Length: 472
Image (cartoon, rainbow, N blue to C red):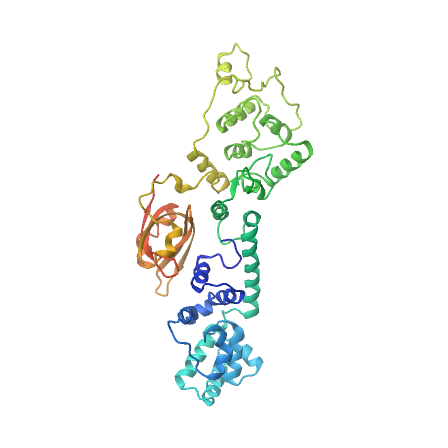
């Protein structure tokens, strides 16, 4: 997950099936997944021959030198041009026209002319009528939507390098992926991937975080992933810049009041920062305050007219705002004789429960740092995602959190859907074919927590049969 071009469920399944180990095999997989290869059936034919379920044959001896490395299957655009030259007696210019023949920009007359020339030349080389038609269909169907070998090889090289970086510099790699936001999945999937790799994920902190995701030394000596301030909902870029600049010039923030006196913030921004835990490491030494208490303190500051006033002198003990002592958990702009003020000053509030923290993290950060949404769902013997490779052909039930989904239409104008889900151990994909989609497809739009029942296909994908919304 996170590796360029090969992180989609289809690609990961194909690479596992091929047991790809080399750059050349990765390049072949990248070409096989393209629409041209899929339309002609190159992927299925290649895999059958790779598993030795079908004999490798060539319509003509000339094709063995062209298609030998790819098990007799045309998967690269260069092979299209070579076949056109070898069997169709075409020039390089005409072979290039064949390569572009199935695109919407080519004219019908050009395609008919090239087809006639190819069939005539192939007939003169001894191919039967059926073989000639099959070879031309392979060339024409594949030509317009395939990869050229140089393109596939370049992508494979980048993928290989990224796989190396993820293996040997995992925390830094995933920090870059989360910051870029350019992966196949939502950033929350890469945060969960970091956890599965044993990397501690830290909440954003006004004294630690930068704009983007960063890495730092964890409590166990390993690298940890720190969520960037960019992930906080409603936090403006100008505010993030002000936080970083002020922290760099004047040092870390010592308290909520210190922060408010130095950084201009809006109400929704300070509330988001407190609720998601960005002030957990900024509490006064005299007393560690809970997030509800910090929110209450902020509201009292606002009521006293002392909130969000950068440049104003910091209130000191005895001058309006009193720093909390052992018994004074909070404060109020009131004299000790004021019964309401005394009640406010002594009010204490419990910390959020783990479930509340996760809810705010999902709402404000769109990622779950303190746990996983499935942590609160009771299990009843369901399989785990990392057990699927050993369950081919079996009917299984899993719990899942929807990561993403893709709705597609069939040739018969019916609907189907590919759904990517995750549990605490990994990511898996389920496909809802039209009949199953008609019954359960709407559930994907209603909830992200669900129980999935289906049969495990050869590539590890689940053919969905039943979906249920999970209740905590």
